[in-house]
Image: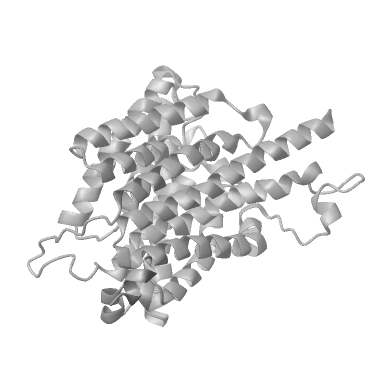
Length: 409
């Protein structure tokens, strides 16, 4: 029975890892559909290469930073060995747990990619990925989901409860979004985005069907992201699935109204709702999740418009409002709709959620400006004007998304 249980847990977490891995194709197509045709290949390559770099760096450095565990043992030890006293769980459970958490870590550069699209250099961004996934992200991950710096003990002693972030509204999404803010500000706006008087110039999405496909892939994979965060069959809960669904549709409907039927807002509204519900998806009542998602959908529309038109923050996919702002809201919302008085399961306090969320975004925001500021000073992080005008596809990869058109004539 123990062997069956351990095997079932391995399979459960593995399926979650595969579903979140599939989400990276969603990140890719969401970016491909949003950027101009001359930058579509770059979007696809960035996501895949960032995933690969993230895997290697998280394996050798990041996972150890977060949890104090490394994999420099024999394969026999890694699958639990054949005797007593081995550090690793049977059937390679710790390996699929790494796989699952690695896909979370790799989501950070995938989030950032959408914000810096169309004008970022390739290799400096890959260096940023290594630093962020190897050191920055796992430091905060270990504080919340591990025992690093006794952060959770301090939170509980100070605010009556630990900081609750079941599936990463703050740890993954807000951290990714606020890191991206530093990158976007350091890069500056795309050529031609604003006139001399500050008036915004519209740059339409290149392919709405690809944008929608990316959103749909992310939505489906998100149920692995949230439900499988239980990391074992004993902890799985249908409440997480229901709350994820309710938050998703709440985000869609709110963005539909606030965004006046704009398809980009509608499809990103679904993601806004899912970002926000991650933290409290295991403790909210479904109505609370619906409200959390609806507020997030409207918040995304408002934040995106403010960034682009008024604040002149040229965040191409709106990753700061989507992941940064909605992630922050999600961390706080867990301390509202997770309370027993509002139909939740309890175990949280509003103050703990507020403080923990603010610490997370402050950590990520400062780190983003440090990492990208250092790279800007040392290597430069932006394409030349000529390269940007030509497009990242030809400038970096020497091939466009539609090669026949490049040789036509």
